Length: 191
Image (cartoon, rainbow, N blue to C red):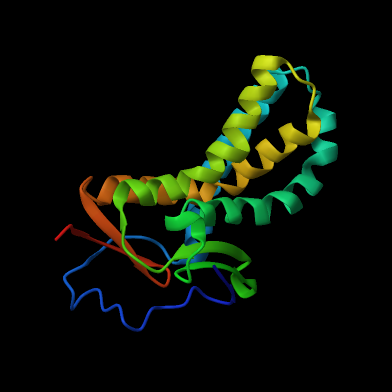
């Protein structure tokens, strides 16, 4: 695993067009965040409603923990993306980075992945940091405002992942391979 500051590096050895890869239609990083705003709003409303209506946790207690939860969630979220990569991210092809000028944190894999593995990587933080903790609080009726705040913060932070999940699901065939060159995603059928 390597740590990077700045834009997602582009593998100079990967020439997608010359190698027969198909680009998917996707916005640049800034527009991706803008397009994710409606997902952010809907996800936030659903998660907040679930916390308030289905757990004993007060909304005020959740709000008191929300800022610390965001600060904790950001590195955890990207670490979970990285751990979902091949070999649990313990390969030089796994990159974890921060892009200050775009206010982005990211985890990236510089190799081929099956479409389903790519989708699993996108969904992993949402499952681990939002769905499972929230289900735990609902099922056990555990009054854990910090855990609920982490679930809410991560759910909000996963809006871009949810948008990316939808773009991949809509544009890449089930049996295809996926690979990125920097920010851009490409697909082709397995050889």
